[in-house]
Image 1 (tube, rainbow, N blue to C red):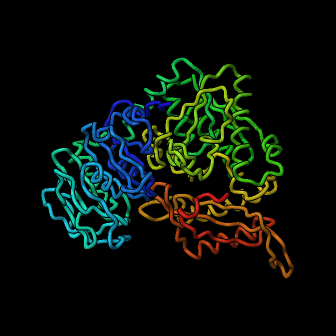
Image 2 (cartoon, rainbow, N blue to C red):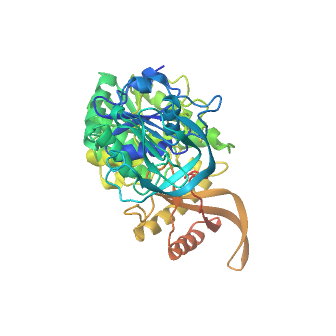
Image 3 (cartoon, one colour):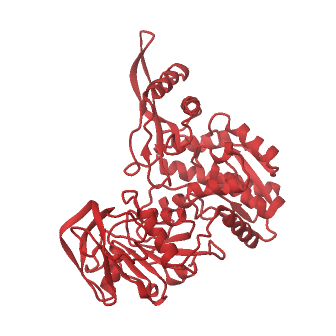
Length: 526
């Protein structure tokens, strides 16, 4: 069944995913150029893709070879549309293969950096670049002969056809990956495709999104009543504010205190949204209910399922008590959807179930309103600024919907929650004191938190033996939350945080720091 349109009337690019590890990065680079895009699996129904009314297509890379049986094929509607097309790596080879060129295994595979020499100074795609160009390669095949009508526009030592174009038809291909940061001028190349080849203007802005989202919400909801789960995090806050701007008092926000929030958060949520934003807000105390449901549960997916189901059941109970509600507003964002295999990709691996994406019960009675479903985190923050939300909300550290419940590895109990809450508050305070709680200009942290591990270790405190909990600290830097690197925090900060946690938080005698990137790890633990 085709999904509902996520946009109204503006420029758009359709990105076809052939299985590349970099597909989400392509989407990020296009959005950064102020052009809307959506990511579709290459086998997505044509009516779903064309409903976007794209101004052009970008074809991703793939681990496959175009000449192999069962390799992903180019959908017929792409070339039939007559729209500009940019093929990247496998996408370039697919264009060549379909249009009469020859693709074969290269004598030498090409993985890593390469020096690109531009041979066509009039190339729209490669114009304005400082040459020679450092690019990132990741391929074992190469184009041996061009399709009719195409010209080679650039070469590397291993790829005599590293860029090709049929400018008359607006068809371009690149053997390298402009979407990755290892291609320093890659963003310029993508902008050239969008602005020079597709002749776009870059109309995708936070202001434009707010106008469209408000109109779309009004159209969807009509005169219906909307219930919104408000956690106080960035995503739910922006979603609630958007819905409130669209339908006003038709919105009732429910804040569920399930006992798994950070220190002081329940009070802050009520103050900000009820008293400052003027929203209709109902605070529900459900700590005991959640703890009872989670008793004895250690599997993280099961925890998410229980929390997600309980979340909706609380809402349905409040709905019946308050009156009939037709819609449930939520704040899942694009990375949530992608990691929950929610892009319609056959065979996509579910990394984790997000409670507000894949953890909802099948018999839920309310229709979903999800205005942020196709936004990345930085776009959500920009929209929040456009809506006038305070920095204390917009720049808040990301927090999973299930809260501390998924940052406790093992069983969730009140004592373990209190331990983690106190340790997390210490870490946050130290980062804030050092002006590193937020990421600015490449410095600081995009997300930072504490994790309570399901192990105990021997320690010595006051000349006595202890056998106590271990807390892991996690801090990352990232631009898009699709990939992340561990934050290089100062040793003295880590030392202060560790000393304070051990001395101020009962039952903890050891603190460790996580230095894993994403991938292979995720940002959250579990």
